[in-house]
Image (cartoon, rainbow, N blue to C red; front, top):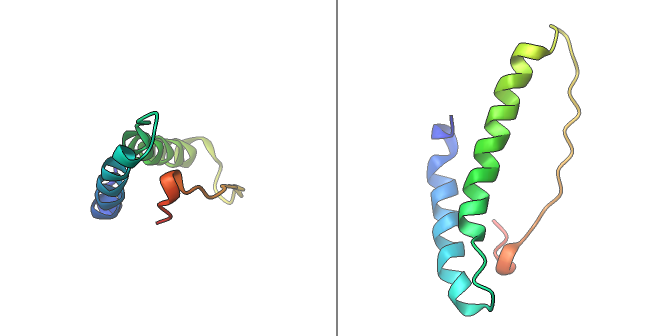
Length: 71
């Protein structure tokens, strides 16, 4: 499901994995990011089936920069 953005997600995940070594807590943002986008892909796929033709979907997201990595 994520093949169109696989390379970009992989790049960010690698950066976050390296960056976590510079911070306390060693949070696993790198895996969280990948799973976040996988969950989003599942939501969008499911919306195709449950929304009637001509439906409007309002999708609001915020931004985040874990460990200061803003990609």
